[in-house]
Length: 478
Image 1 (cartoon, rainbow, N blue to C red):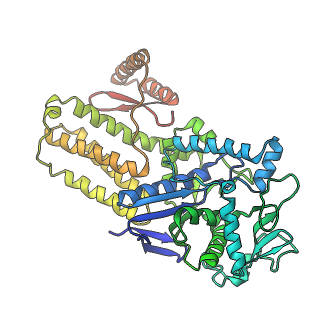
Image 2: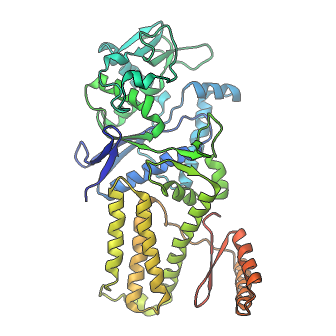
């Protein structure tokens, strides 16, 4: 089955193929370094990390670039509030970004270009637009002539009038038309600025991404991504200025993730309606948060609630409990360790089907909920095998299941961890407590045994009652 990706440019799923050989050139709009990250930022990072992983699984070589906006109005204002430079502010939040992304299991991009380090490229692109009649300078400010670009609105699928009806437009008497947008902003007193052919100033937001994407990936790229809220005006403006400058298609596929909501409203720092990623990581592991972010299709809105993270934690625990049981079963069978039977058990075919179901889901526009569902079907079937008497054939199957879950999970960036260990004395105390609880259960003193289970769960220890014995594990949220 061919990989199909939903292309915002054409409002439909299309078969994906790279423009150049086996290389996929992917640019994703990154964060503005003026405040803490929230779950909305985390979702975009995790979504495109998974997309990159899956493209590599399919055999493509991915050149992945995501930028940092390190100069804009919000950064200037925040730096003034804190009494530091925008460069110090950028360093602070860039370090936080890398630390938190590492905890989420997000792999590093090939490049992380910053706007302030690419002023020359930005100026060169604006000069080219000016030469081609798409840009004009008025008193140190440079604007893009939107009406001159005939395809403006092709990403948003609306006319110029529809796009700007009710939109917030930066009013300026300098503009030829109200909807023309800034490519270069004249320096204001006390603000960072750079020399240019139009006088001292700084770049506009949209031109930064075009110039950096083209520097690292070329004039035409395979995938351009970002949040749904960037379709207009940011990505629409990127298309206009890039294609006006080169005369070529800027991006073959435009991929946008849905927004994270909180109480039904978009999660955003500007409104105060957000949960910082740092706060979420205080209570839950990065893997729990990552799982939650992948539990809904990437194009759909994702509503945050405390319960949703608890559910993600429980789902992860189900998988890790199975992997621990399989490991225990196999490590305890000495004859199996010495020689694995060469004959493939017939029950493995069931798990092959589920593995194919996972791939089919990912081929269908990276449908992670359906892919996870296939893994949980594996978990269910494997648990049924473990409930029966175990044969050498069963162990071969279980080992195969364990390997498949880890391999497929690696695409999603989950199910790769190992069970945490307690110190020896604590583990011995826990075993004593489990023995006491088992005796209470045998005496049918359910209330007291349930109270022990509940209190252990409150401190992050999950008990699993099996036929043979009670097993424990540390919950993913700790």
